[in-house]
Image 1 (cartoon, one colour):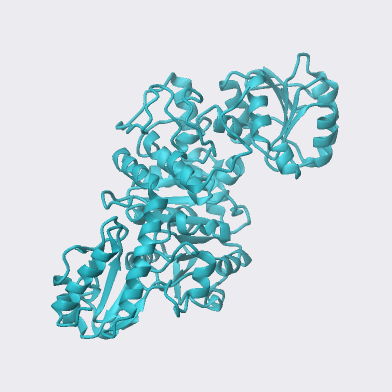
Image 2: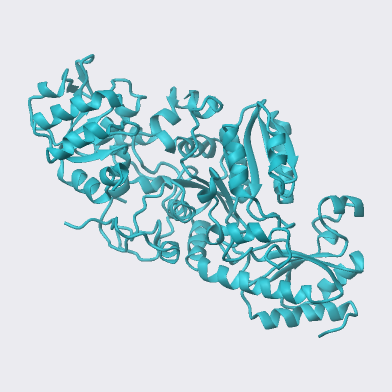
Length: 436
Length: 161
């Protein structure tokens, strides 16, 4: 007899991007994964219902906690990242806050990269204040900064694979070693790299979080997020009683003891998602599944286009700096070669001389680049932070955030690169610069 | 071949799960919050006959509990072990003696000696794996909670929705 699983075969990334989590549904045989547009599920009998609610059996109860379409997406994400499982959320920030909420208690302390996405920084400050959790931001580029910031109460180190918008590349293996020496997990936001360019768990990261809204979804249609767990971190090491101890919300069930290395994810779903909400809807999960099918193809194109445009901008004398970590001479070249050999992402900044006015005018001069506040779309995107996302800041504050008055952020899409360069020339022409 | 590869072979795991009917659980707890109870409850729900082996209990999951494997009065397919690794070699010898077809050692129950004893006697051996999780991975519904089953297949009609 032959069984479903062919153990001798280690399937490749492209194959898994299309198939993982999407076995044909046995009831109908539908090949596209169905959108289970339902809030709730009819139980077979009262005993089954009890078993589901007691977590004694894997079963669907209510779509705030689980949904077959969402589960299909979760399995695919876990498979591609190399984790044991995932929980999807209504946004990347919901995923992040829920990951933290599951593992932290008042008095704990987080060490986080100062180069994190601004929305994440704001969330961390807010959560830390509300939950009485200590928070230290460090310059992520020197491993010693991480080590120096760790305290007795530290329970988590948190950074991005590729920083937004600065393009800082994390030395994942080194920072994971600092975390593990301290007996705490390393959580990495892998949104900008996606598992196609980098899989942080292969370098020691314990938890990976994503905004699915960006490259994974890839088409700018939906908001979503996810938490993926490697299953490698030992939550029973004495520092995480909140994960390891009997849960008053489940009649004294000890998640880590009962579910082993699946315990953190079970708790994240059965307690945090259940209690805080923030569930992803099945329509959005379906769109993310569709997006991921072409993730490897799109990422090849995204990073190729981005590198070509970075090189083109670098060659211009009226561009002060191009902060693309994949360019020759980047301070991150060594880390890119190690962690991102397929490409250093497709979001980067460049600095125009001419300040805020030049930045704003440049935006007026483009017609293919969409002027909006998102990244990771198949379409190329552009924004001038000093007049939009960071407009309340003075020049000194902008500088502290790594943004100049003439900084432009690009998210490079999958269009013809010649057309994108033509379009950027329109921006330069608008501010009176020479067109090559 | 490493022990992990030898005793965690997906083909063997699927064969054992598909062809067995009776599971004797050595170290099955009567405490409903313990992992062993979760596994016993689950196996019984999925049609296996579960035989508790625990000298401190008379009955678990509505079934008579035996003091040892040797006392079990019916044919056993799988001997599933929730005991300290040091206890495994003796349990493996008992499993061979009663004619069991498979020795299954749960998470953390790692005993190369016990595994080898059973394997040399012709039993299928699974080590450091959870019977409930593996059943849920290949036959049951592990995927409904977003766990990676690792199964990549375009075949229809296997598994439960």
